[in-house]
Image (cartoon, rainbow, N blue to C red):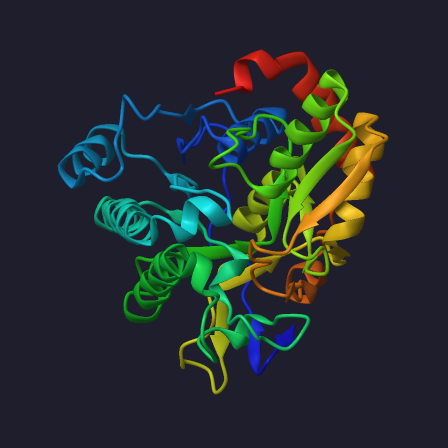
Length: 339
């Protein structure tokens, strides 16, 4: 299969049910979904250390953990994440902490002979003004969105380190990277200062309904376009890619190829409609007001996921259904989620 002048390589390694699989960041939104999916598929030897058990910013601790546990496969999901407000007020921390986590884990995996490594990045790695939909080869073709530039640079650095290992050590390295769109689902953070847009809206609308408020405020103009994916779909996609993809071979054969894949839903939605759908799901019947003082972020961000779809994977959970499932989970667990 050819994409953008390269040939897609099928997986050089395939996980077996008894292989030792490390899910770095297993207690977070995506990490916990990945563990669920692996267990559903019958994998029984899953390593899922908590942050208190393994700090991925501590190189000595990461090196020691890999030397002692010798995982066969690694999903690098651990990251410092947050919404627009959290990112733009701590660009230094998002750059530094994410880069340290990524580099420590990638190099420990390489040095300890991990069979295959999946690095989870973000669709924010692409230029702010990318043509739409955003193809993998648009990386580094223009300036980034400033509000999350630190996080994006860290993710680009992790992606590039994986690519360089594949290029210069093909006999030892089988490192892939995935770049997902915006995510949401059960187990997300609902912290009003640091959460992403979907959990923030669910909490806002729910609390407005509970207290009888007739107005909820959304940041920005409501005109930005975003692509959202339910977290269990992404977990399924990264497991699928671990089993079915090992990067691209450049043309002519032997030249470097891309080792990253976009993971998107395939459609985007205007933020004003997102607000309406969340409000309807929660049962809030008041007014939605847009605060134009706060930034929209990137005006439009739709990933071109045709490379992934060509391999035979497609998402299965619609946006409305995903919001319904997420809200049902929030109602049950909101006291645990509130901070």
